[in-house]
Image (cartoon, rainbow, N blue to C red; front, side, top):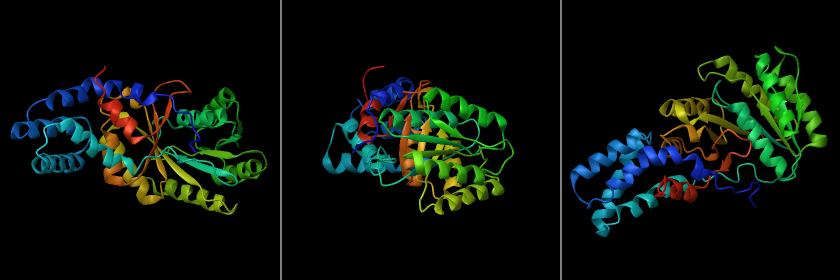
Length: 303
């Protein structure tokens, strides 16, 4: 069962990537197979689209081998198959699928990635399916973060549990859990926009997980990354994954980048599923990640 609506937002989010980089890839693949120049040019384009050196090398090696062994001329079709193979095991639309009891989602990420608006989109999608949703303002280090979450909570129409700025984030989580176990299906916890180099803040996140565990619940940890940061976002994800078990990724601001190839690098190098794509500025601009839908949108001939 898919908890989320399936609006065709992926195509919208990939428009700039398709126009700037992937149109060039499609044009390149119209050439006859076999020439070394083709493979060099393809490598350059993929790396420029933030697919990453490691993933690009793997893709081209597989592609060249298949062209040789299958004597195939339709390189584009083969490339689509290989990209789907990288993405499909990480198809994450069911990341917050229905389950028994209260579901807790800890949302993490550095400042400026669009974390709070991503929480609002997720809450809006869940509420639109008739789910009872609550938010916890556990980013207590900045008063503005609490105010921002309360603003979005009012817009979406969901309750926000908050303490005073500077309070204990773990205490906010505890109070939110006490409230949510009686009147919510989902509790989404906003956490401090912690830099992945700050050990003490990572330890605070681990403490929150322990608080949730006291309620006999295993939280999902959703990492929000800004698609426009490219390979730096990949480095952030790697550091977070080393510090805490990351369940999945919400890739925000996909519509604002021409380098959507970062999706491939994340799935291939980190083995963390991408669950959601942020595809615009509105509350409805959220797309559950679907590998085949993503690839079809990427290779679409339209602008």
